[in-house]
Image (cartoon, rainbow, N blue to C red):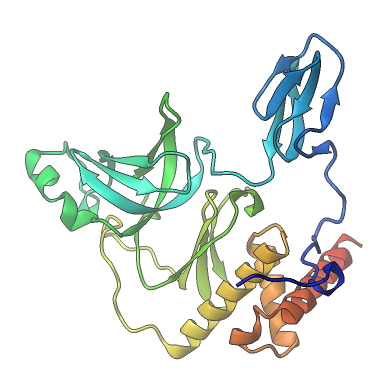
Length: 292
């Protein structure tokens, strides 16, 4: 299906909470500088002794190094990032996870908590039981522990807040829309918990309670109807914010949630173009009121 409409008829999804346009924004082929003495970084190329941008993004300069950070790209991990990944392969003493990065991330057997939080060396029996802990298709929350030379991420789940995820909804957005915070685990007043992975994967589930199972036990009890409605509404609010290219964090999500309640939007109608614009406008007004 091809969408053929006039530009004036296409809904605008450019309402951003921070109305200030980023400085040094460039597009492919834009001239960055004619001066010499600069080092060419990622996202740039030289032509006729001038430095040009090869991607759309923001120009960054560190001393004499000039690079362009793309506005939309695969996830580039940093140590300490909270990520959500899906197990793609179980191999010798490690799991491979899809974390929206250029390469699959690695979760070593020695980097996970054993069931019950038991502290001991990993044995051959633990290696044989790896599929009982995590198997292909399982969703996992983890933290970036290290970055290998080839750029692949090494993860760990040694904290009790990390581990296998169940009974929830996964939303995928651009990693550039996730705001970095001190904590990415939130129990929202809406009656649900949310884990915002720096890699653009967001997990929404019933309110989380810590357990001592080492992160491998799944709670498969029936989720109450009210919780499912809250999760569905939060999911569509996150998707609406992503379509409007608005930064996604706990405050913006709750503003969108409250706006959808105030407007009387049905959960299924939240992704209609006119409803998205109304919710985004109310969120923007709320941020402007808070600034005043």
